[in-house]
Image (tube, rainbow, N blue to C red; front, side, top):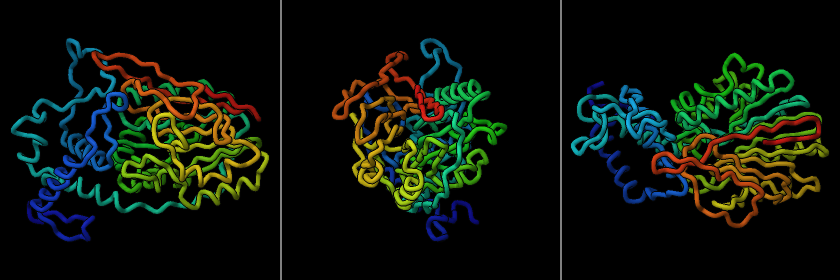
Length: 413
């Protein structure tokens, strides 16, 4: 194919010139500059945009820089010698943008991707409009009566502190290996935009369960709004390819069951609401699938796991999710616990919506500033508001939950 021309798979296979792709990218970026969510929120996030198109741009930039060997771990000195709480990577000096080179050096000096960042942006946005197919799930996976479930949300950012969380989770697995069956469950969000290379580098490469333990320890991953920013395709491919997640049957929802408990991990992101996907829903066929299994075991205790929040003291509620789960939440027997992520905090609510132990655990991997935003609405029984300072910035802690089931009893920490 002639230099400067590429075949765009998202454009019906038609040949498009580099000039047309560059023009399209400029239009996209210009629109983002005018309408994108660039607001600085000092009490919420340190680095990850919430606008899906900005996430796609950020993802494309990261992949291009990594593939071009433009990234390195700089030698720290002076005030910056302390470990950075966000990342230990930086662009090599010759790649740092300047007034003359506002974006990427290869855009001017090489044909790498044919100034193909524009192509990557366009392809990513096209994928955003074409979702993968939600696959049906089978029967619950049987688990033992004495079992440890390690739960964590919004973890797969790939930053050093997220990797340290994985190391601590691995220690919890080692401590329980002798007398408990163990499962590790991620409540969703692979950053920035759920693209293939991000599942490899931000999830698979540093997952707390090594391949050697894949047959012994269960691995599970729910769908998050960031996973859907590029249509969810990469998530489904990953779940079907990585042998550690084979129990999940290539699906984004699942159930675990023993003599006393049934645990539903639900996909609330496939049809999430709003450009940013901040409100969850329960797409078919999950409601009917749940009812089928609950009718079979009406006396068992139930736990729900989702990416999205049913309600929140800080952000939006998810009314459509609550409505879809109304038959479950109105049962005479309460839901024992509901764990979710999405918000990058750790908090436990007082009983609400017929749920005895509602808990937010979305603080596993995104570096966020310690928030001064006061909770409103639902009452809290616990909120982890610990923080540490780095230079002039104050960051929240990261963490996870350990849920131990012993017969009919449950303990969480």
